[in-house]
Image (tube, rainbow, N blue to C red; front, side, top):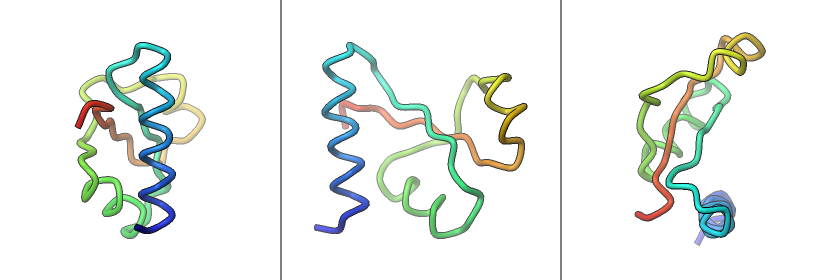
Length: 68
């Protein structure tokens, strides 16, 4: 199992303790980064965080269910 996948799974597991349903991802706009998240179940966000977008307008915004 690769490190990125392990870290993502630990984040999802930790998020369950906070009672959230999904993680909001602000991804560096590189093919490898975005492809990694998409391969692991992330999808484009349905609601863009306007404040985060002001800070990182070039990022790709994704979300992933923590109950996959």
